[in-house]
Structure formats: C-alpha cells, structure tokens
Image (cartoon, rainbow, N blue to C red):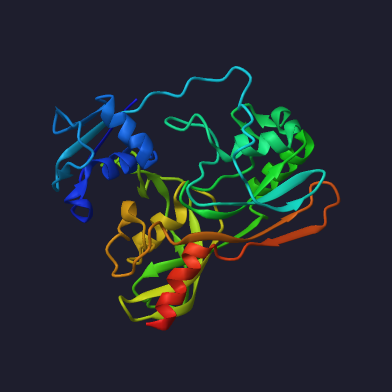
Length: 308
C-alpha cells in the first residue's frame, strides 16, 4: 500500500522518520525500518537517513507492507499488558494505554491490545471478527482510556446494537487550543475522508453524520491559551473529536495531524482520554458505569498548566 502526503506548514523542518510515522500511522521504530528498507521517498527520491529534515510542501511517499492475513485470527501475546478496569463473565472493560494499537492492521501485525487480551481471555477468539476478537469499538493508537470488549457472541451482538442505537455514553477529557467562545456547545458536522490527505478525516458535506457535545471545565492562559473540555460522542466516527475540535478552531493540544502541534503547551501526544463509559449490561440489563483517571503523562501536563 502506498501512502502519500504533502508536508503541511506545521510540520515543516521535521525529521523524515517522524513524518513517516505520521503518514503511515506507525511507530518511530517501524518508520526507521521502512527507511532502512528503501520504502520511503521524498519528492520522488529515496530517503535513507532518518535525520533528514523535510521542508513544507515536499511530498512524502511511504510504501507500507500489507500485514499478512492470519488464517486463525489474532495470535495471543502474553507480553502485551492491558490494564483491566472491570471483568465480567460477559465482557471486560479495559483502560487502553496510549501508544497501543487496538487491533492488527497495515504496519501493525503484532503487539496489539487484541493480542494481549486474547492471551488472558482465549474465548475471545470465537467472538466477533477474527482480526478484532471481542471488539465493540476502538480508540486511536495515541488516545488512552476505556473500551468494552465482549467475551461471548451474545454479549458482542448486544453491545454492538447498543452502539448502533447510540445508547452508550462515551465522555472524553481533552485539552484544546484557545478558549471556546461558548462554555458548552454541539458540533454537528459530517465527517469523511480528507480529499487532500487521504490518511486524515475532515468535515465534508458528503460525509457521514457526526455529532460531538463539549463543555469547558477549566481554562488556562500560560504558556499558551488552552482549555480543558469534556467531549461527549453522540456518534462514533474515525478521529471524530479531533476533527470536530479543529473545525471550530480549537484543535486538541499535541495533535500534530490536526493542527494542535504548535499551541505553546508541551504535550507529547494528543491530549485525549476516554474517561467515562456507561452502557447496559448485555445479560442483566443493569447500567454499568466505569471511569478511568487521567494517565500520568496527561496529568503532568495539567499540573504544569495549573502551576504556571
């Protein structure tokens, strides 16, 4: 698979290995391997040095090997640690760490959350799709927080139906650039694939319905104006919160792919955490409410802002 992107102004002068990681959605180590294999070109020329600095407008082309399909689905990997929040006979709720890919895909054949869970709960192999055992929804690689995973086919069908009916409550903590004019609001804007950068999503008139509610919880002025907001998903599109907050002029801090990379606030990844997840128990029908506190890296960012 070939992926191409022109370097936007916000990423001008960055090392090529970092750009490859963003374009191909792989780790820096995987980006280095792609460079070593001669699978990266900048403006048509093979780029071999990871330290190469790339200017604005240059076209970065990455040949991403397609992960071979595993005939028996995901292979369990006991060394992948996935923190558990709640274990039930019908499901588990996990607190996914940032940097961990949810399931195998192009460039991510191993070391996934799905593989780690399969090692602890072998019954997941017979639930859902072979390459997404038990999965009901997902989070981006660099987003942390709560996910529910079904342990039985019946629970999987019920939880998927709850997602489709939009009865599952998903609330995120985010830090966004600037101060939103309104303390609370609804972003109702369809989302589809970006026509200029196909690895990204964008607000598009012909996109799929997407709705995000937000509420400002805290504001900061130094070292750069920003706000801590709670975002609640009413739909579940790819990169939805990141796209919607950018669309209203307040991108997620640390999100270099969606305009949040130069905010004056030091954050090594998008400040986005799935903090609250509420759904109906697939067997008893009772409400299940779970919470996950901010991980240490994001809490440190907040602590620094409060001390400024």
